[in-house]
Image (cartoon, rainbow, N blue to C red; front, side, top):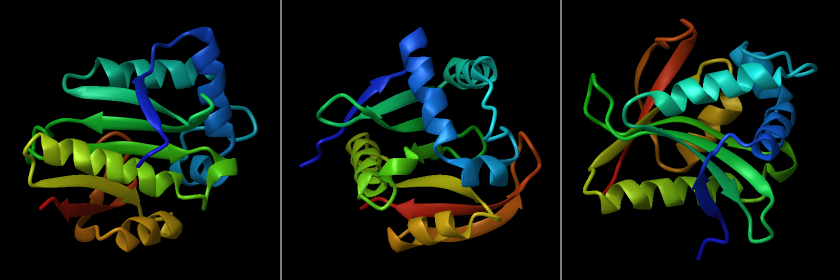
Length: 166
């Protein structure tokens, strides 16, 4: 049974402070993605990027909190990709002080169960090629590489992964 709770990001000042802290707790990802300087995460830029994401048709930005209400993760989900019809995980970020504590696995399980309950037969995501630990994480959960290409937004080399939901 999961001890995590998901709720839509409401963009309050308090939530955005927490989200900026979440990004700052992941300097390796920030450097690899190249979108944010991990030493100076610009709150207004994070908010603008997440508002754009949340404003995209079929997308939602969710905060993951533990039983004590602490922010432990952030998810961006797309219910149906226009190119392939599959749901996609656009981002799954776990707070840096919670890495290797099973939070990521719990979040993936919640997402998979959610899409399985909506009668989806598979789900996809893209992993940056320069993040081998991310590739190892997703592979350990049964996700399989199906393609390599650049991402649409920034042109970064990515590995597209798929998981069959049975």
